[in-house]
Each structure stands twice: as structure tokens, then as C-alpha cells.
Image (cartoon, rainbow, N blue to C red; front, side, top):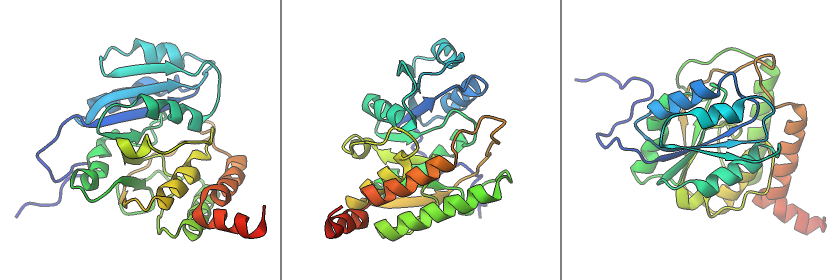
Length: 252
């Protein structure tokens, strides 16, 4: 009897390039090339869509220097935010499935296969990679950051009637026609609760799978802060089906 598959492998012999990997990047010169290299090493990667979000360092030049025909680079011109960069990247995606990949080495592209499995099997329309389900190794970092993530996920679940464990995860994978049919309105980190609310409102089939996580410190370049948490609460109230009904009832 064979043993369990190594982390990141998937039960299928049909490994083929089916993924558009959308990578928003803002001042990521220290990690961009390494992140892109890991993505391009994946047999699932059909194209890597890098959206430079008005970086003031060498991020754009490094992205353009990548010598691979699967790489497409777009420049926002000035800093608009992660949501705005993703909106552009989703528009440019052409493969069967689309996944969000940050340029900071926190998430491992070797796990694309695990995320793809429910999509390839026809069971899912959307797959979230959860840092709070059993998966690979996790770097131990900020306690209050994890508390904030769990709070926002719980609040999102209450307003969407989902039972996610990690609403704020970067790893969100979609059938391309699904993500390209949803209007993304938020320009910054409010993308996470917005897309979760809009997916919920469409009654799409959502799966979660455990992933590894190599979080970085603020000294190492982490950008999300408490103000983004406040914005996330506002987005949950603005976009979720229950929030919409409450606004109608109160006339706000």
C-alpha cells in the first residue's frame, strides 16, 4: 500500500499548465525574482501575470528582466493598492484557472496542485488555501495578527453564512470565468472580504485546503496594518448579503 502524498502533490496524472498566476507587487525587489522563479517552476503555471503597483524601487525592472515567455508584466503607473492590481491582473488572465500569488515568499507555489484538486475534479468553483487547517509548516509570528485574522474570518462568516477558517488568505483560486465575471471595487486589502462576500452571494461551490505559511515581519516588508483591519470590517458590512439587507432595513 502506498503512503500519503508529499505536501503539495495532488492525486492526478493530468499535470498540465492550467493556471494564470496573478502577482501584485509593490516595492518587492528583495523577493520578486525568487517568488517568480518558484511560480515558474510549477508545472501547473501557464502564465505569470505580474502587476507592478507603482513601486519606487527596482521591482518593475526586475519583473521585466525575467526571461520566460510565460511572464507578462503590467505597470499601474502609480500606487493604487492590491485590489486595484488584482483587478488589472484578473482582466489579463487567459488560463482555465486563476490564483493570487503575493510576491513576498509567504506562500509556496509548490502547493498549487493541492489547491487545484477540487477544481480539476469538478467539485469546486473557488478554493481557498487556509493557514489554519492542517497543512505544511508555519512560521510562528504575531499573536495579535492571528487573533485579528480569526476575528475577521468569524465576522465574515456571520455575514455570509460560510464556514471558512481563513478569509484573509492570499491563496484564492478560481475558475477564470468566475473571477472575471465579478466586479472588484476595492483598491486595497479590502479585496479579501469583498471577493468572499461576492462569491458567497453567488452560491458558488467553495472549498478550503490546508497550506503552509512562511509569514514575514514588518521589518522584512509586511505591509498590512490595523487600518486595513478596520477597512475589512467596513467591507464585510458593505458587500455581504446580510450587510446589504441590514442597510436596506435601516435605510443607510
